[in-house]
Image (tube, rainbow, N blue to C red; front, side, top):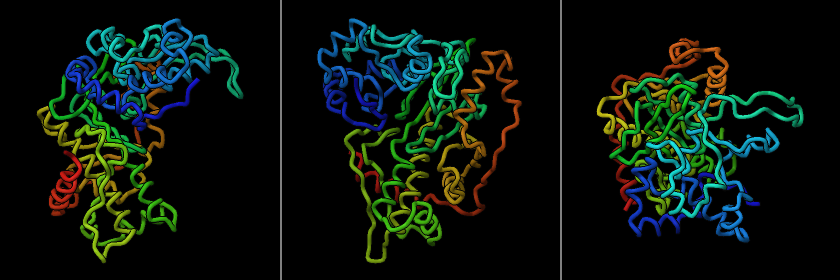
Length: 396
């Protein structure tokens, strides 16, 4: 009925701008913990209904299902037996009330989304459905967990206690720290439900960065001529960035700035600059954006964060991990598991089966990690201040 719309798509920007002008942003933030931004699902759902023939009427009649990718996968794996989502995915739609833990009638009305079109919300751990035979997948397998990608990575890392923070580095990046309740951010971060393990809810503070790995991919296409790995290797061998900075607002800026109409910027170019310097600036921009969110997170929780756990594809770049440790002046602890999010979902399913009784049992599991400590005497504060100056040209 509709193409899958990715989280980076900005087609709902006009609607978000309209709702902001009407003064709804504070109410939305107080209920959902989310800034009014095209990143989230509600505006995208509204766009789909607006562009389908009789979309709103058909959705209200229960003919159309609107959901995130988890609910679509569940529907397919169960051959339509179940249309459900978990609380972590529901909390990212901008239709879920963190306080009542259900779809919010006022938000549904505001975005013109019929409740009949939305999935049933369940805990992240528990029985959702059983599979049907699909390809090589046997019928009758219980589906016992569903959870958002970044949330699952936090669970897989064993991040159960406040004061721990992890960053998942992919096309974009997400920093997340667990909290005991839905505490509002005053520094541009999101409040979300991290998971419900079938017994209790865990909340989290999150900072979503729109372009990190995707910024490096974009820069590699711009420079061209070699593979992204070869270009990245050359970039890390440079003595410095040559004064070149790249603010990758290629589809706006996410946390902690939340400026959906921001445009990207490459600055500091001279005759001595090369494509390799642009690649270096793209790699460094990952670290700078993580520092922006890390500092905002510390300001919100009011206590220093002692280290950063990381996972995701970009963490394979050892130079980037060391740059990040030096920039934050904190140890960076890299997971050596290639699929931490899948591991987190598996741990939730195991908890639903009774393989583990509590967080302490899961915390005790062995996890292979590598530690990057800041190099003594290497302070990158000057570089970060130059980044902030470049950022100032983009953020109005």
